[in-house]
Length: 207
Image 1 (cartoon, rainbow, N blue to C red):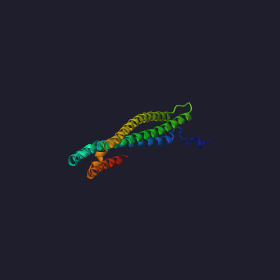
Image 2: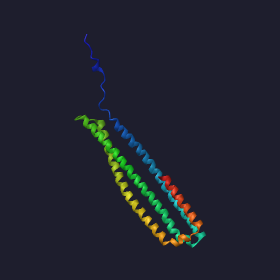
Image 3: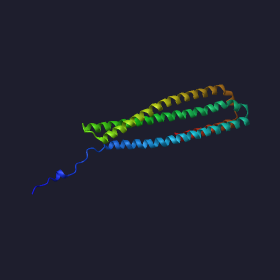
Image 4: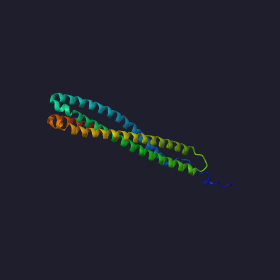
């Protein structure tokens, strides 16, 4: 009776399974994409709330000006400029965070490309659909992340310029309206400070 080599009948492990590191990177990128989408929605809502807050603050300044007289009206441009400068600073910080996030995604996507290319090289001349698909997906992620990084860099330069311009205006108005600001009543300054604090609290919630 002919003996059967049981070793030959054992199933051989598949050598075309994707590298688990690729799956880890994919899951990280997918999670990051979901987080980014949520943050963008939150940012849009926050901007709408800030515009409403700015409108409400303007109305309160109007009421103060009518009640407390000329000195408040004269110092009003200074306080409005401060609010605008704070908004410009928040936009600059958001743009910087967006650039850092895009840079991190770009690095992760490049690592995926490296792993996919490494997997294809291990296959030699034989074509492997799984690894090729991984490589195409990773390359697309690299391109998307690079585009986002470039756009966010441009946005950061723009918002930084606006912030520096706003800060320059605040300093100029502070010098120009020094006497009017000093003559404002304590109650007026306290109320205006409360409005600025509202804006600051709103900004901190967005960070």
